[in-house]
Length: 400
Image (cartoon, rainbow, N blue to C red; front, side, top):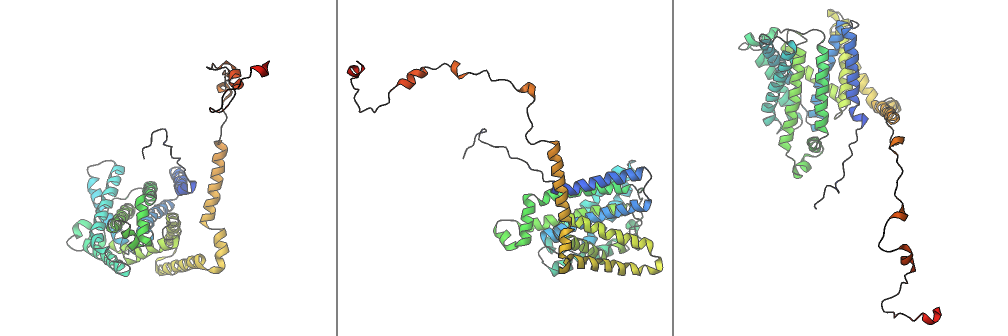
């Protein structure tokens, strides 16, 4: 039906604090860490640790798009990261000869590395996404191993360094600032993507692919879209890794690294962005600290301690005896508490129904006794109401 402008009502936009809590927390942490770094109160090792946590979160969130939201198992995420790291850092080193500003070179290398990884995701996704379950996991795993072998083989050894790795110019320890900015930008894109109609179509495919296809959803298109977006951000994380660690060796992007990303996603919760953030930070910190603390002859102990930490986390998350503990000290409870406090603070600052200032309040000069009418009020009250069929009676005698 046609609706005029007067009948159209404005849609009230409600901003839920819990949907933007991760941006608030990450923004506050970024400002705090930046102030500590530029005032000289942060160690270089801490700055490198923050950098590693940032690109680990990017990897976990991007893999969660495929595993958690789409419901497909992919074990080739490390391969996309390696492609982005090699191509992006190599092109960035060439652009550095012509562009004197390092930040511009870094941004261009991030875009190029992510675009190349997305292109490989499109090439691999076209045939691979026709498979499901373990078959898709095997194909993506094979892609990760093949791409590492090809880019480090002898024909490309001169360009990409071969088994010795590609040596590029590393940036200062302040690279963690750029990594956190990229992380916040990525989270903004992913969260809005998931909450859009495209995200609802993706979750519908995960829940029931047959019903989604019967509803008119282009399943192949959305599967490929998620795969390409995840590969793009994996390539961006690879470029960030390459500019912080040199040389870039293919052995660092093995099958085990893909499993480590998958562990972050599973522990954080499938389909949970906040869970991926917390799990990536919680698992990266002990891994890096153990590699620094343990000497070289005890480096194998790092994997054992790391495995014990993972087992402990799994037990805490799934033990029935610890259910009350999990409910009381869960991140959901903490988020609800912070959201309630934030709403109370906003309500105090901005009153719901503010009073009008005194100078704006003016007496209404209108007076009903002064409103002109065609018929006097006493005439209206003196009119006798009768039916049309009734004949007027002679009231003269009675009046007399």
